[in-house]
Length: 347
Image (cartoon, rainbow, N blue to C red; front, side, top):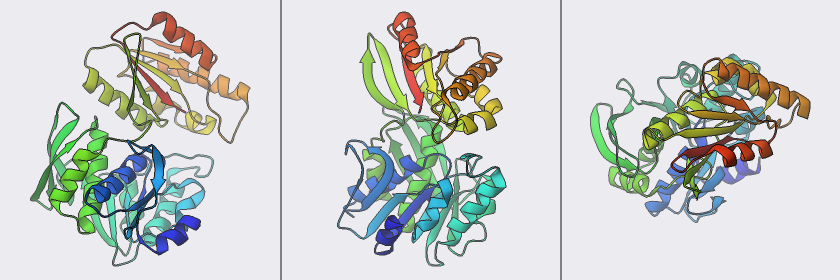
């Protein structure tokens, strides 16, 4: 509610969605900052290299990551917004996808008629939630057919290079310092939002090129005994698969470890089949007991995590359940080799 009041005094920009909202919020804020607009920002991760998840600027724009948990994003009052995609999540307050779509529909309805709503056009749930909003609506995806789309996506020595098109017209070529197609998609949403509030293609290009990412989103945290260390917050099957796919593209045939601590018993149980199929790009998978935020017992967390390991093992040749984080560490110390890549993932 406090954020809603602060936002009402600025040109508020809200980013929502099941995946990518922290990264996209940071991208928008960083583009505005590089362009000299001096924005304010609040998000749920540290922006690199700021080392903080928010700051107060003197400019007119206030960029906020908006979470759907317990409908908290209804308290915000943005002028412009993006919805990056809607999938089943937060099962402790949304028992099914239609209930989540209904919550997003209320959020989209808050954007005024003279505002902009940027939505993922290839997500049926997102379109269902947003298509009746009063705001000017623009769609984005990685394929033609939306208002904004990306083409000629290719790896560069720092991340991804791609061309952006807007309603069939060439908008600009972008260089992004982050790996993975999911980050190109996040960048498209940020680009569309920033263009909609008046930034030029050159200003957006420079801001995207300067952006270095956020904490715990494919964050390179150094090396240990010749093992490359990556830390990532992925805790939903879609995000797990996207992160590991990006790692496989980035590191080729190197052996990739994924040490995963699931986040919430309800999410793990509801999405068990999807989780079981999401680790295929990793060579070795270690499952730790669930971080049971707001729910359950330690015994339930261990039992559900062990079941997850069993389900993954039906599709993956090397997965192990570790009874504790200490056992996870010991396993890595005993078996990881120089040249391996270790991704600590989840809670």
